[in-house]
Length: 99
View (cartoon, rainbow, N blue to C red):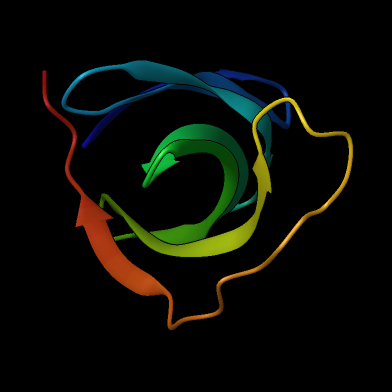
């Protein structure tokens, strides 16, 4: 997993890069050293494709971005409703800047 971030004022944009696809950041906010953003990923579950909303929250610590990733909700792709949540503990990780 890798990220490319863009920032204009307090708005955060960019992309999440995975093994096989890139996904744009849907909404993102920077407030001081706090960062919050959401990506909507297409995930396969058996024969279904689900749109899964993942929320990242974190802060800048010693030049690294420490983030927590939490699955917020999933819906069957193309469905107007029927959201379901798969609760679970958030995953914490740190991002280092690559130049």
